Length: 142
View 1 (spheres, rainbow, N blue to C red):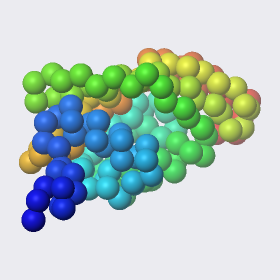
View 2: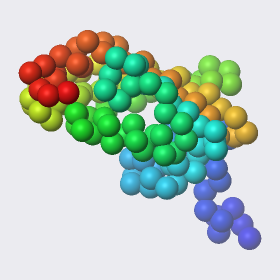
View 3: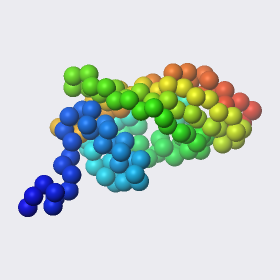
View 4: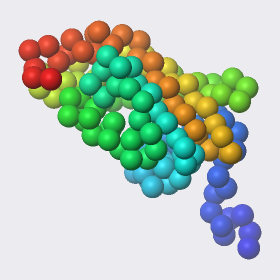
């Protein structure tokens, strides 16, 4: 069977894995994106945010996403992915709009990806200004 008959190969280089992960989510292939995660995957968000802390596995990622969605809608632009040896860095510009107040804030977000066994093992997320993001919730019940 040819490579074309089997579908696209799973990327193996860090930058390619991150790009493919994002592409799959963007095109609604959630299950395909999750296949790129290592079984021991973990995700860290700043603890000052309502969805902050460490989240483990696919279930943890989904819980974190539900927590985030209680507070904000988000748009993502200007995605750049850079290789750094066996790590990858993704930089995006994100606009978060608070559901309770309608207020928005735009910040750069840096995500540090690490890998194990050809899959994404860890994502650590660094928002440029968490105080600004939290200020969009002011006067809203948290």
